[in-house]
Image (cartoon, rainbow, N blue to C red; front, side):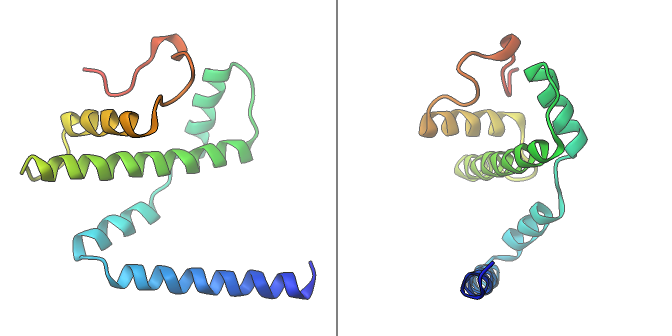
Length: 129
């Protein structure tokens, strides 16, 4: 890697860390606790790999499973945040209920279009009663 590329990479990383610090300084205590919990937890790579292999019917590499686990974590985070908004809009408190998650998933589908494969695999659906 050229020195200019390396310097640019370090500069970008430093700027990203500064931006994250500014963001975290403006979090409410509840937001900070949720963010810390989000950063500490990860989806088990072996479990994700097993689900992928069952769905696709063939082996996938560990890096592919890590990438899908990362995207899945972001998806779960978005659904939880939407569910929190649903809960707040309804004026409810406490832990999230399945109804909050179902409504958040419906809102996510309405915003982004169809979620998942073009055809459901083996008729599996998320958040079904």
